[in-house]
Image (cartoon, rainbow, N blue to C red):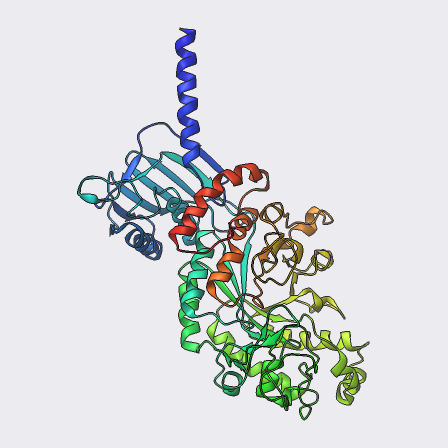
Amino acid sequence: MKKLLLLQFLTHALLFSQSMNEINIVPVPAEIKITEGSKFTITKSTVIVLEGSGLENTARFFNNYLQQAYGIKLKISKKEVEKNSIVLNYERADKPIAGAYTLAINNKGVYIAGDNEQGVFYGIQTLLQLLPGNNQKSAPQIAGGNPKLEIPQLAIKDYPRFSYRGMHLDVGRHFFPVDFIKKYIDYLAFHKFNYFHWHLTEDQGWRIEIKKYPLLTSVGAYRNGTIIGHHPGTGNDSVRYGGFYTQKQIKDVVKYASDRYITIIPEIEMPGHSSAAIAAYPELSCFPNESTKILPTTPWAGSREGKQVQQTWGVFEDVFCPSDYTFKFLENVLDEVIQLFPSTYIHIGGDECPKESWKRSDFCQQLIKDKNLKDEHGLQSYFIRTIEQYLNSKGRKIIGWDEILEGGIAPNATIMSWRGEKGGIEAAHQQHNVIMTPGEYVYFDHAQNKNEDSVTIGGYLPLEKVYQYEPVPKELSKDEAKYVLGAQANVWTEYMTNPRKVEYMIFPRMSALSEVLWSPAEKRDWEDFKKRLPAMIKRYQLWSANFCK
């Protein structure tokens, strides 16, 4: 009898181990329980049942995925179906952050319940990772050549750890078409990210149509050439380069992201990183009649006279003048930005603003005296506060890089801490919300291999280091830790000229970060993540996405 019980136990353990090996969900759920029994098979006759209202969007998303990957499309119904159904519903989760869900699979079907629409959508993302094969060709087949979509019986309870789970993309240095922006958003959705930080303006290109200021795109969106190789460059390609998104395209992308429960935060850089805007409207500069400063050694294409869109990378002296003209210009720009983006947050940059122009400007020096400011850092704080007050009056809030702490932080600002964690710690001490983006852990423009086979900005950020990142600094008390909303990876594109390079730089590091931001800290296990990674790589291949091998 003892031998029989031992044999039954070992058989059950083996089956459980085999079942667990089939479960390769990223980010790993908070709770997962495998149950015994035959698998459930999704067929053409399976019905998606909407027991909760307002879930049509998620049902369509799932159906579109099935059709694209496996060539099947399911019926959607609001009527109860006893078996062979995928039921979408709501259930109260009592979690502090929205997006919790439960997922249960038995031999009759699938049941997904979220604490809101977003939670149901996340449940669907998990279900997608339980489907077999990569596509119709590689999935097991049943009679008639239809895919055999068997999924294991299990129960999952899951919820996000952080309310802000973000990915950034710089389209100023290099421009990426709408089709790729949408693909990028799909990557975020699959990994349960909920914010896309769209960096739209830079020294090297202004990428958003502003109807009141057409020169921003006709002039500011294009540069006459781009340096070749790593900064400072071995030459210039002398190719006119640029592009921008029309307001119609932006509305389309915003809707696309919203359908995937992703909020887009636009970034309009100020007061630095503004060469492209100044090239279009020189009056924004403290010295509108001065030509853009270009080092004689800088590889350059075309004229060096007048204000120019930058052709190289770095930080540049010519920045916005804090004049009435500039503030009115920015208010008008932001009015149009607000109409395009429903996000509560507008990112206003605030980083890497040289003070040389302000120091030699009589206007700026007088303004410092008139406003009783301490110095040029105080002037930057005045600049940021002025913009914040305007956006607050429109019902919006600002996010800025941690330089906006210099000279005194704006009253309602959220800080993105990129120069390490110090700025985030300081902001949390002052009871300001913080999003952690330290270069050491989440700058995906850094090399993934010590001997990288393509040009990168430098640095070394291997996959394991991303996975080991803890967004809440140990220096914060329990009360202060609540100001850490989450974290974000930044993708600066000086050396990413095409979508394939962007994909190479984000995968598989994006998958690692998704687990850092979604899963409970105690569930994170590097060795276990490595075991699940091959399944993720198969998905990259399904998407025809490039990735670091």
